[in-house]
Length: 303
Image 1: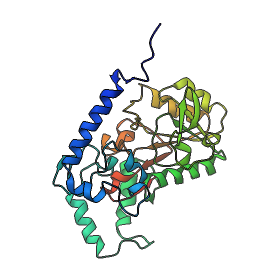
Image 2 (image 1 turned 180 degrees about the vertical axis):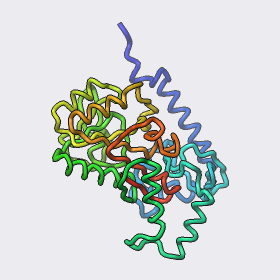
Image 3 (image 1 turned 120 degrees about the vertical axis):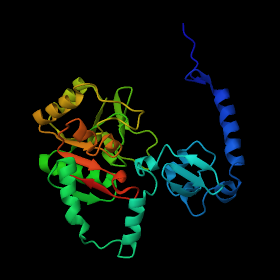
Image 4 (image 1 turned 90 degrees about the vertical axis):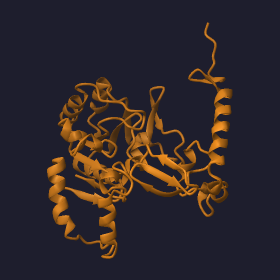
């Protein structure tokens, strides 16, 4: 007979000890940030839940770090605390905060207009560069990876005449509705904590475990999936590498069932100049790259 300690511990660490540690670290955080606490300790005025984006309340700190500036891999808060940044805007600033070439380009462009709804001469170079770098012949620009993924999935549905999308458990593709599903006890459900969503997203989305070839074969067997959307490496549930041969099986099965394949490299582009796709010879139908492509400026591409 085994005793159930789930109510008193997490991972073998007592809940009381975790609570004490959180209180101690929270007190140290507040003590080091008196200016920040005075300004936002009770939330930022005018913002729902006191933060510009609701998920900022998910951080375990008593209140968000109030940033003064950031350069390279360092953030400075308004209290003068200098922090090594291992997040880098969740890869938006993957190559450092405000890289000098990006900062110079923004300053140069700011005086020439920021949005035209028309191309500039820069587009003459960008299109061929995307073709050369990532291997697909046709490209479009979007503002976020969420938008780019959504646009590509719309095209996939139009091409195949199918509605369903297949994702992997623990994936992250921005806030695309169909990707907000999880497997819990082997059953597909809406992702827990998904605020404001009343629809059953599993009606148009299938979800399986990454690296499970048998599950992949079964999910695609009905030939009702328009597109598989995948990170080459799962990055939002620790780091889950593809098993040897898995990407080959994924490509083979999608082709056999008339299913299109979208590779989202927003988090994995750091693999190399052409991302994981180029380094490991993937051959997707669609390729999406989000926030890192513009050095921290909101932008994305899809091909």
